[in-house]
Image (cartoon, rainbow, N blue to C red; front, top):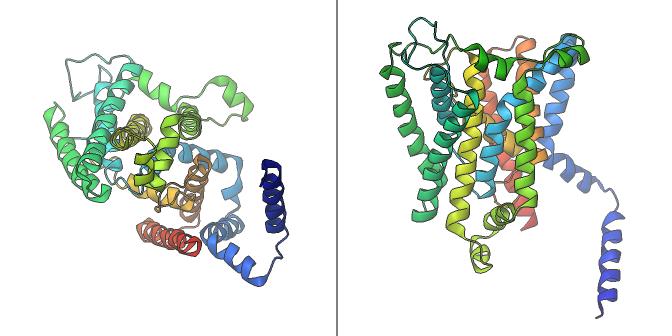
Length: 361
């Protein structure tokens, strides 16, 4: 068969697939496969009708800002899930890097300054230090996963406990006696939560914090890495079929370590942002952030089966979660119930993901 004939046959198959009738079964499968997003859209519409402030300009900007605050964690976790894994240490890396960043960038005049002898260094230097810390723990996770073939769940569970212990010891090592780290240097606060005057003019006086632009820059960077680099292609190939990737020349060990190291760096950026956004950091900073990241990824179509996922899906997942949780707060739902909702979302999304896999198989 000539190449021209093959192209014609492929085109005919595509047209045949497009012309498939919209049967009740096909519509039902489509709704079921996207049931979580459909439910969330219905919930958002209901919340908007109950509380009209939910769709006000200030509320929308607040939701977008919160989305950008949590987005780097989801971007990092997404890569781990593409490798058919996960990362339970994400929240603790966020907490450690937040406290380290905040402690190094406390104002000189702060009472009970954690490190009294340290003058606040350059903000970018602290960001680099935080990213190195996060990437180091991520590489540690990746090493154990790749070298000893341990499941990422077990490895990152152990790392989570190790990092939390380090964080507790760090909080008690300074002059503040384990108290919350606050009184940040204005250069740090302004860099993260400040807003240029021209942005305020464009939004009618509503401030969009600088960390939004940092997060959007990371989105573009991760999109480029996932879609335009050899590393990204190797990551998806490894997630889809490790043995086939190995035979094709993919360095499984290096790729796995790099994926987890990159994830750790993303968590560190989140920690750096949270250090100034929270402005009063304790050992509980970053607690359960990994749940938000995992939930956002599975909502956005990053599959635990491996080798499947898009940056756009991660963004949609984070946005949908923020819409739901901000909306539930605005209609007076008890925040203690949020953990039940998050757990249900994760279970439901994973069940739908597995259903799609079994149907294809």
